[in-house]
Image (cartoon, rainbow, N blue to C red):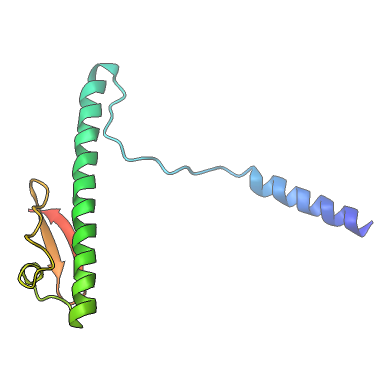
Length: 115
């Protein structure tokens, strides 16, 4: 009898919580939903994704170089140019068009921000 009551309470709880309204995160989109503008919307999304991917690749590579510098030198570089001088990098990568690297020498974090 106790097992049956426990089972019924468990099932009622699952039913109660399972039927709640789901709040799905709405993806960011600039699509108008108009089939006429679909090609332009698609190309805009591709360009935005390309810019985001380039900035991610650049910052990940630079962040790993900063981490290597800190491990070998025992301190964070004062500027990104300090990574080029001892040979950690042959040259600094160019940020994506219209963007620049924002480096914090106190935290060692790098971001790509609009110029």
